Amino acid sequence: MTSFFAGIEASGIATTISQSVPLSGILSGLHLVGLTLLVGSVLVSSLRLLGIVLPHEPVAEVTRAARRGIVLGLTISVASGLLLLSPRISRASANYIFQLKMLLLCAAAAFHFAIYRNAARGTDRTGLPPWLAGAFGLLLWSGVVLAGAAFILIE
Amino acid sequence: MSVLSFFQWCAASALGTAIRDSRWLFPVIEAVHLLGLAMMGGFVLLVDMRLMGLSMPRKPVAALAREIQPWLIGALSVMLITGLLLYTSEPLKLYYNPAFWMKMSFLTSAIVYTFTVRRAVLAADETRVGPVWGKLVALVSIALWAGVGVGGRAIGFY
Image 1 (cartoon, chains in turn purple, brown):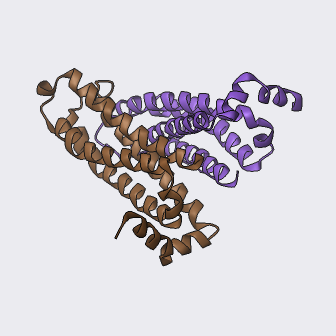
Image 2: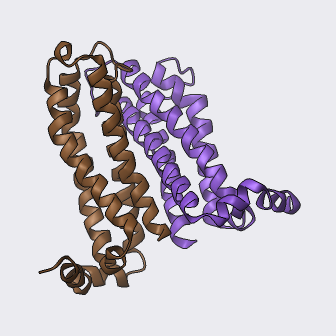
Image 3: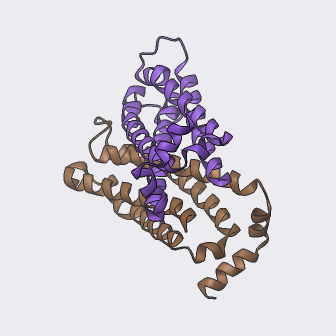
């Protein structure tokens, strides 16, 4: 694993990013915008599942709108996150806050695609109440943002 | 009072000193600030996607905007209050930071745009606005708020 990480850090992309402050700044900014879109859309969708936002609109209508924001936000944040990680993957992977962020990210993504998405469509067969799926999804994605913020502050 | 002396006064304030001297206050306020920004992004995107004709086609734009307005103002208030608190902890550092001024320019433009042009278009008759203008107004709104996010993150790189 160490040599794999060293190979990534020595790659042309990683070297270019690490040597350019403006490029790192732009990628970090894009990462934040992606996370904002992702978590903001999860928030809208979850608040509808909880019956708080737009309670008179059909759940599927609101969550379908939010789903586009979730997919777009996830794509932007994962792509920019991988690029940002490439020059410092060894250091980051040894950091326990970063490990927590990755754990929460995997849990949030797995929960989203296995349960949340179906709950939002009204097709969930696990028996989990939609409001609970909304609350749990919101909690997991907020955790990803908070762990990300903590990682920036301690780095 | 010049802008610099105002920033110096903020730096010497009790509030700024308390946040600067605390180990936990800055990260906690920063976390709430980020969640406020995410909340703002979610609600702006929901309405702007409707304006672009990409979601909730049966819901009139004006009705959706009216229902979302309190949430938007709530998210903006959280962002502004926590942002002000974060600012008071390091105003002199920010004064000399170009990314901070970039963020402030985007923030001012985004707020003015949201409560003037965008608000007028959202309240107008959809048939009068037309799909092209609706899309353009929504895209400018998304771009301005994205600029706030990018500018905010760029502060850490200067």
